[in-house]
Length: 252
Image 1: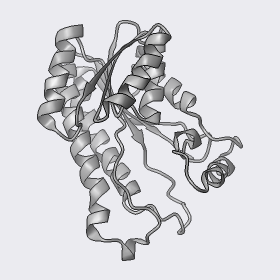
Image 2 (image 1 turned 120 degrees about the vertical axis):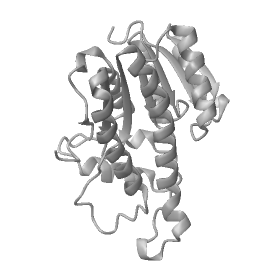
Image 3 (image 1 turned 180 degrees about the vertical axis):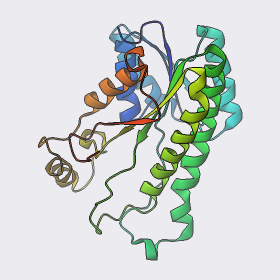
Image 4 (image 1 turned 90 degrees about the vertical axis):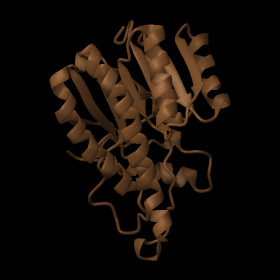
């Protein structure tokens, strides 16, 4: 198993992406700790993992609260002896469908401020402990996006928030690499089965699939499998990098 004996913390573990990665990590032998603000969602994922024979714990942790994140990380290390994988996939606030020139400044800044704060807080907590043990992987999800996206893709500041995370990833990778700690982003052109049921959902899924080179979109299982590989020692030479999980919707 790729992650046997390792400890993985996932912020936003009750969501679709977080849950998919949690299930993959547990399947590969990791002790998974699911964090989020809604315990019921976390427990749903944890029960699936336990039913399949994996190890999963849950905790109500606000990933924007530095004291809460630090306290939880301390508890995890005290219980397991290490913190080997940290992944932050919490949901950012967003306002889509409004042109930037008509967007309120508060709506523009909201995803950027959340992304900046939570990424820094959770990476700092993990990074300090990984430096001390001399190993670890910090994973992000999102990536630089499609630079040639049509002008009618009105995503507000969502991509700006992901670009901020990418800038932070590069700097963090430089600073922690000498200590054996890796930093990697999984980039996606969209994962249809991660979208909540919504009006026009089928049309969105078709648009995502039609934009790929493979004629199909990435699935949640694809994302989870890739995250498990990126977190494992088989990817030990991979850092300061993105892994493209877009089925060819994004070109490197």
